[in-house]
Amino acid sequence: MKTKFGQTDGALHVVDFLLEKPTQISDVSIAIHQTIAKFEGQPARLAFDSLSTLGTMFNPAYLAPWLLDQRARFLRSKANVLAMIVYDTGINPPSITRNLQALSDVVLEMKFDESSGEPRRMFRVFSTRGAAHSIKWYAFTVYDSGISFEEPS
Image 1 (cartoon, rainbow, N blue to C red):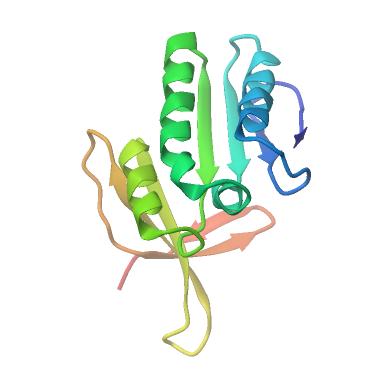
Image 2: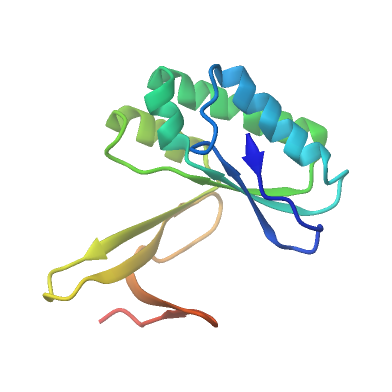
């Protein structure tokens, strides 16, 4: 897998499953754990783009058990990793989406809202494990300097 590496300065490092298509799901596991090993216990922020792509390359029924195994390996290794997994709903069966949501500590959703005639990017926290949250949709705008969220109407 091609991975963007930088110093462990809090930067987000992306493991892009689209750049090089793995031939086996074990190739993906190896790439993930080699990426984590490069940080040697230092805090790491990783984004895996995209788990939905893996479902189109392999049997999508393997995704939930595979992700559960990866999560267990992270916990056993005591890796200091914040992992964000990108998953596009609608590509794989809804049952896979539900399974992945149940395995995740936090599920964030994004969508485009075109009801006002002008497309707006929307964001919400769908679920969190062990924490209260609002499920309201928030419009957001991306600028060179960051992201701005609007209060819901």
